[in-house]
Amino acid sequence: MTATASTTSPTEMLFNALHLSAYTPQEQEQLLVDVSDTIFKGTLVRIIERMDTTTRNDFNTLMDEDADGEEVAAFLKERVPESDEATLEAVREVTADIAALDISETETIS
Image (cartoon, rainbow, N blue to C red; front, side, top):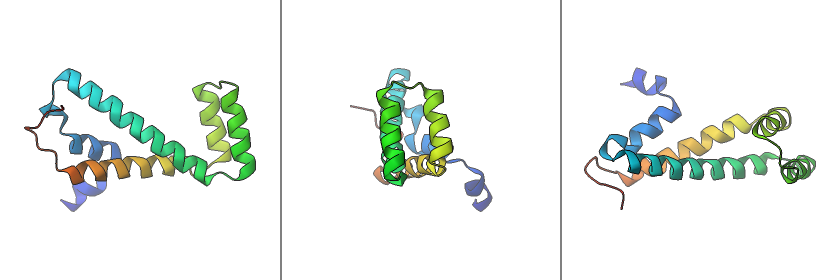
């Protein structure tokens, strides 16, 4: 069991916690959209918290210019090297929150 836990990615752990097979395809889609939105917001907060004032101002300017995803990713990789860790933290937190709810496979989204 220890070997399995150490090789399971945070994303796999999240999907396991969601018990997606218990839901209809439409419910699965909505659940994944909601979880993705929560992870995105959590990641963004963590990344901004890691930025110094100059980086934060430059990031705001970049966002005001409607930068595309590649530009944002390049900026974060260069200026916020801990951004990948921030994403993992957000995934782990959401996974822990979902696991704490102890969603059974017989429940459905209401």
